[in-house]
Amino acid sequence: MKDFTLNAYRLNLQAIKSSYQNILTFAEFFLTDPRPRTFCLIRHDVDRRPKRALRMAMLEQEYGVRATYYFRAKSHVFKPEIIKKISQLGHEIGYHYESLSDTNGDISLALKDFETNLKAFREIVPIKTISMHGRPFKGFDNLDMWRDAKNHSLLLNNYGILGDVYLDIDYGETAYINDTGRNWSSTKSNIRDRVVSRVKLDFKGRDDLYNYLRLNPSPQLVFQVHPERWSTHIMDYYLVFCFDTMANLGKAIVNVATDKRHDT
Image (cartoon, rainbow, N blue to C red; front, side, top):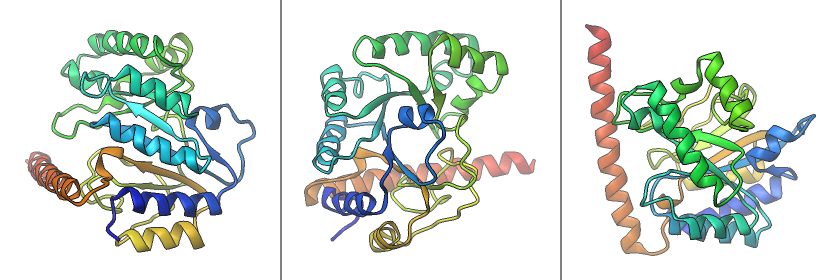
């Protein structure tokens, strides 16, 4: 069986379900006190193709698993009917923001953009947690919106957000596994989707990952998956493969250019 198919994801779900008693949404994680010693958080960044997110959400519901889906505010992703359906399946919806990238680094404009988009989401479903969108081909880190203590306080208190999944979680003892770049490496083809963790994991492929999840997983796990990457038929599989390959090539060029600037 190939990796990055819905059947492969089903196997991952089965392994997670058998290994973890506490499978939490991010909102539940932020609200749980004290936090459990062992847990798994399943996170989905919906960058494109929201129908695939719904398909994945339906599969998770079959297993009684609730995940968190972070939707971008772009017109090709922000589909209210799909967002509502995923929420009705029991999953959490969060905002996958990219306001600093969209305003070319202007934090004042970015805050206004964030507030406008957050309001639009909240007209559909509750929003309690957020996750930045990396936008690797733009030179702005969207997390910079909240690094100032005043803006971070605004986020948590005025906007009613429980936390940002990058800034407000200590990943020190947590395994962070993601499919960014169509691989299971923590650094390859991955520019911004990283956390500071002492648990270092890299997998060669589907079998490696499945055996880890089933047999010897970390007590604390964040499993981050992009739904648009997971296909149901062979033609689509290779189309997505080509798209990811081109995207990875672009990221490699960005990395080389960045390294040259740092050397000068």
